[in-house]
Image (cartoon, rainbow, N blue to C red; front, side, top):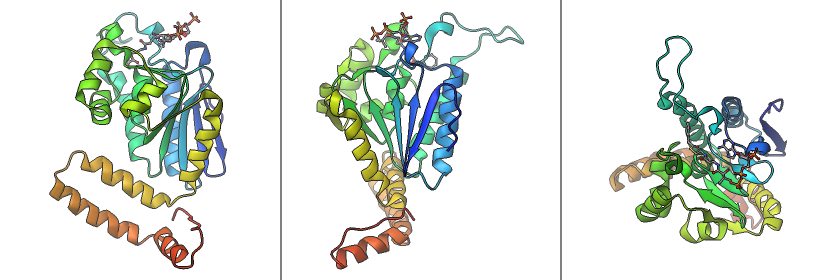
Length: 268
Ligand code: LHQ
């Protein structure tokens, strides 16, 4: 994996790659370069066969504070024709990020310590599994500045925590703590901050040692089924199970069971 970035850190340890958003002086708020670098790292992690689990996290005391607002004070004029640039054009870059995470053929973990606000919060929502430290603060901050949840938040948030709570978080923009996030299903696990790094590493290792092809197919089945009828989901399930059945890891899993030993998955 490439590691020479300005605003992200990329570290690979065995089969786990950790991508750390790294602008701690602004709580890892996104500028264009950090957004571009995150995109490049996710693209490479998707391609790289030695990577079998991706962790996305933030440096310092935050996960991320959303879009860097220093250049978003007023609607921007494009350099060439003076037209007001549409925010939707800029948003396409974030859409690429959330789609990369969902389509990643391996698990993606959001490891959230401290604040996750605005688009940073919604990037965490697009990960497969969210683990929080007990000092986490989730804020759908958009309405605080007169905007609406973006980066897929309008789709993902109600599906994760239900429409009522999603409206509450989005309209009132109150902080949701790590323990509360666990209680309402916004994260699957909340741990004391002192145990956070160990818990993230253990979770990532467990997933990285698993049947990666099967994990990719599970993601495809669950994510696509959100938009399918039951009948359509059953049809998709058949196709995907045929693919899973053809993997070396399926064979290994069955053999390991019959031989009463732990499975050694290769991700193939
Ligand atoms: C920041 C930021 C920040 C710059 C903290 N920018 N400096 C919008 C537009 C376009 C396309 C994509 O989508 C979006 C969606 C969005 O993401 S909208 C939401 C944008 N984010 C926010 O509205 C959050 C703004 N930040 C805050 O409300 C607070 O900083 C939070 C609640 C995140 C954290 O509060 P504290 O823990 O009290 O920290 P702090 O406010 O003291 O921040 C520390 C520093 O970070 C501070 O700089 P300073 O020089 O005073 O130490 C902040 O100015 C800076 N910072 N967020 N988004």
